[in-house]
Amino acid sequence: MHVFVTGATGWIGSAAVDELLAAGHHVVGLARTAQSAEALRAKGATALRGDLDDLASLRAGARTADAVVHLANKHDWGDPEETDRAERAAVQAMLETLEGTDRPFLIANGLSGLVEGRAAVETDPSPAVGPGSDRGGSENLSLDYADRGVRTMAVRFAPSVHGRGDWGFVNWLVAAARKRGVSGYVGDGTDAWSAVHRGDAARLIRLGLEEAPAGSRLHAVAEESIPTHTIAEAIGETLGLPVQSVDPDETDEHFGVVGRFFGRTMTGSSDLTRSTVGWQPVGPGLVADIRSGAYTDGIDR
Ligand SMILES: NC(=O)c1ccc[n+]([C@@H]2O[C@H](COP(=O)([O-])OP(=O)(O)OC[C@H]3O[C@@H](n4cnc5c(N)ncnc54)[C@H](OP(=O)(O)O)[C@@H]3O)[C@@H](O)[C@H]2O)c1
Image (cartoon, rainbow, N blue to C red; front, side, top):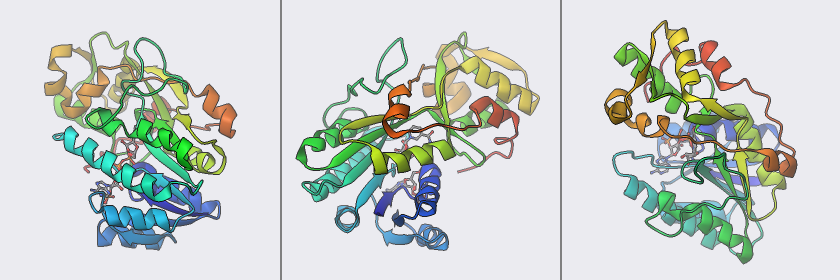
């Protein structure tokens, strides 16, 4: 397949591009800079210059592809409304282009806010509906197009898609621990996160494109529930720092942006995902990754 990938130079996207190329697919990656375009060409993909705000570039990418993987996100933590607005507008533009073609469209989401008090399952619909809701309600917008001739699927990634070089949440926790001189967890540390290794997440993206029925929700979850104090202990041990509870009222000050998420349970099961597309994660797990030194270099991005 010719696959158009947005976010092709991101943490998950760059692994997804490698996975798709290795499986014999052709990749056209959206690139907003000359540097990103060059990085894509160097690995054998084609670059399409564009931006999430340049809807014509997204329509052009979708029009000429057999499949679309949408992973780009502004992640502007200071302006979440703008991030969500841009997400919805971009997704709408690509879906309108694909309408009636029966081609696959894969959208990224997370596990945050899906359910309370238990692990989310794939049959739990996202409560975010319409513009103004979390991520612009883009998961539901996409899945609605299953009835309009697009083989849509949502991949909900665990809050830690981990591995060496990760610049996401766990890297921020490590940076906060270094800055504060303690590895913190929020409250009693019984909140929990799911996790998945980046390579396993990339393979699920490929399998989803190749296999998933229209309207699927897939969970990129290898480990269902890791208590946040266990994550903090692994970080503390690796950095040689004490491990300490942080008062829930002081999470922003202690952790920065990632504190909003570390004091929350974000867990999901992936039983249905595994049986639907034959996905079997092979790890390593998050704690093993932290202990092996995957986060000790500290990425500043
Ligand atoms: N990583 C996780 O643990 C995790 C967990 C849950 C959900 N997710 C979701 O999974 C998706 C991929 O995440 P990720 O970790 O790979 O994110 P990432 O590393 O931050 O990559 C984001 C990608 O979006 C691109 N991008 C940003 N602003 C753009 C714009 N204005 N126009 C075009 N492209 C733009 C970036 O391009 P440049 O390379 O040019 O900067 C980059 O390729 C996102 O939707 C994210 O929210 C990730």
